[in-house]
Image 1 (cartoon, rainbow, N blue to C red):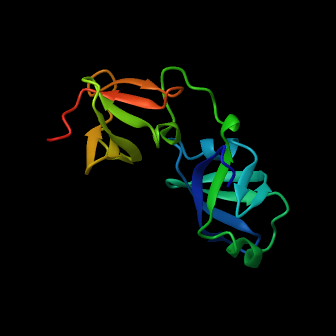
Image 2: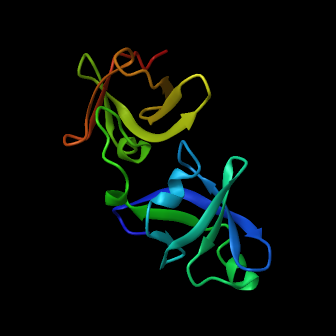
Length: 162
């Protein structure tokens, strides 16, 4: 995976005998992952030839992959795309853009670094590692007051002693 790549899913299995892959996309809508091209899997650049939604996942046929045994070699591999393949967002952020941001309180105190994001169903959660690890709700305009990707900071109205 190149430095400018964004992980969009994972190959979880094979389907049938003609090389179809089972994919768990990390996109909000499963079919969106198939539209970001080309994919990078296990150091190879591949193109999605066909796809169909299968529950919360996808069944995917890659260009030139017609063998179940070869398809099995992709199982467990992450799928990534060049970040420029993703749609540009207005006033929203990709999780991958938030990982690594320095978290600073509205009082100017450095609280730590964003190490991961979690989806809980109610709202997303930002996991921060500083003197200790803690989670805060991703509520923009309330808890999170500003995000500056150029400066690499996330400003929060939060007391990390809670």
